[in-house]
Image (cartoon, rainbow, N blue to C red; front, top):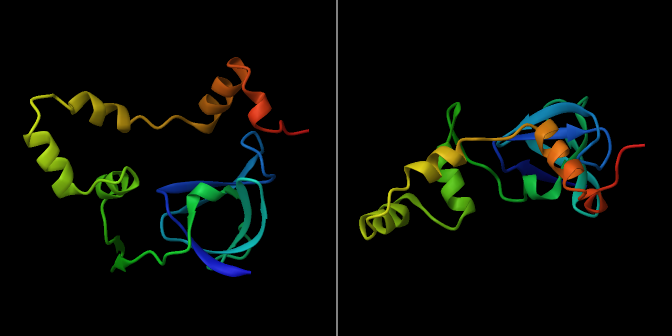
Length: 137
């Protein structure tokens, strides 16, 4: 067992290692967790702050790097975090935008649209992509 941190804005804690499993809790950016075990692309975790929160989260939602905070605020804002996930930073994005006459407002609008887990599950089901996950029994 070792300490890790939630690296995304929110991470649904699932009862089983499956996207279709029941959500039992939600962890937020910077929450310290203990990884109990791994199963493919999932990790069973327990919250350090609230040990009653225990379940499965996607491995991609976890980082070993300690998340830094300033008071009650993150050291980076949501846009900076999104850019970092794409390999960008604010300066690089600004330089790129200045060198292009393209309008990126629609891209920014799309990035604000976060589908619910139900929508994602319906998409997987309707696209017959269920081979990529094990449906809850």
